[in-house]
Image (cartoon, rainbow, N blue to C red; front, side):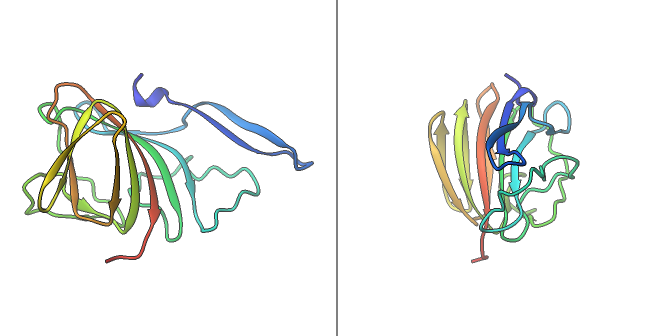
Length: 170
């Protein structure tokens, strides 16, 4: 299933305060820059902590691609990484992201977030300044504001679910 066809079901409340489904369908916020690039599906975003569950505002719709969440916010997304052998490295200048131009891999970057990364399908190397580890489907990485990159050395895409939570820098 390509990432653009992820079904997203969102709950909320009706005018009487009863629990209801407010949407059920393909995720509306897909950032796909073309063949050989990572496709990102934004599933939900909060803009404060604690999150505000009143109303039915969907902060993912109509927003430009932004890697980290806003201050005190969170993001839930799925990213599909093509194999490195097919990957096209485009310049992604994003607010809140520090790119490491001199790193050993072109994807090195850092955000002031705590990220929960769950490998859904495929395999990928999580690279740090020192060291790397192979993650496979079912593995979880807790990424705590470190300089890192993702390297897919297999010949098939890797899909990862991420929850990003704003954090203080270290």
